[in-house]
Image 1 (cartoon, rainbow, N blue to C red):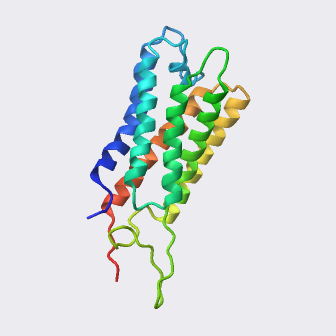
Image 2 (cartoon, rainbow, N blue to C red; image 1 turned 180 degrees about the vertical axis):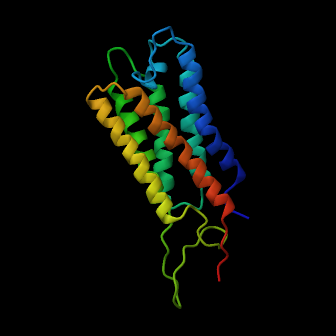
Image 3 (cartoon, helix red, strand yellow; image 1 turned 120 degrees about the vertical axis):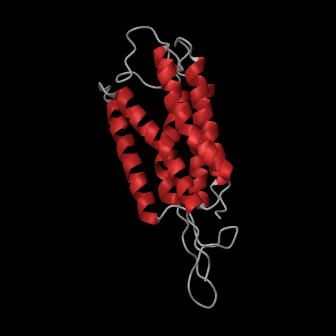
Length: 210
């Protein structure tokens, strides 16, 4: 049995539902002419948006889910869990400081921190084995089993994918490209799904110590 609590699966599974469900319902509530390919997720929770509470709830739920998942993913290394929690906290902060017509530096900084932390955390979440007296090396999670988190290379591949998508979004954002909204939704959705994959991997893997 995994040391990761079952409630971590609930929080990790709820994250993409809050995000994608939030923007789907919020987009439907906007006036004709809203373009999800060109306009950002933050525009749906902006102070000038119609029914902005919908996306506000979606983003707040997303951030809280990441915080809870970071708390429960005890098989991950502290650095990875810390970055996942940071990404969740930054998401909550950008909700508190929504996008405004005259701009909001705090919102932009919080969004940047959230995207950056949620892109990098998988690479730092894999526990590194530590030397044991008498030879051999082993990481020791709370129940004395070997690491049950995602394998190192899949975690690195996930981080590489997330960073690639984030880079694409950054190019669109800083060049005022035509796909700002689309690329942001791709990277945000991917970042919301990866914690779920990590929790599922942790719940299904258990390797007893020799």
